[in-house]
Length: 115
Length: 111
Image (cartoon, rainbow over the protein chains, first blue to last red):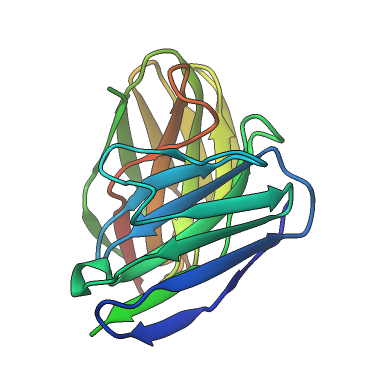
């Protein structure tokens, strides 16, 4: 199994600011994804982080709002830009997936509160 | 469009009272159905992957089964520590490694 570390685990942010979340995996993985989990809701895929190229975004998510980097096979960042209270959520990094071992593992999440 | 629907949304059981959680799915070419457990404030914890109809997998008090339209997570003689939200997700042939999640079933087991 893959161990996934996310930083920060939680933060309180001011409206209009941006925050970058880091995700480190303890082994090389083919796939990395970023999910959002709003309070009391299930997981919604934001984007697939592609190594060395632009991320692939899901409908409703755009690069200007959620820029993603993946410089190598074990590390990715998600930035939440120009935050508003609606961005208050848990952001989860995941890695692995059916193109690796068939299992997708998750980090503990980053809980963002925007005031 | 791939869809996953879980029922019930919430389930309360007495300790030892067995039950099942349902996951109905619509997907173009199922490549895998996944069950996760999520505790409050934690990331989802992988439980099972099922790949084809008729497949079953077990882990302690949990057994997952799969048909062509749905999956069940059977919980036998649950304990309070089984209380959590259980998430179902599918990977379809139209996707590239990504999972589509259902809304989850929140299970509470009372002693």
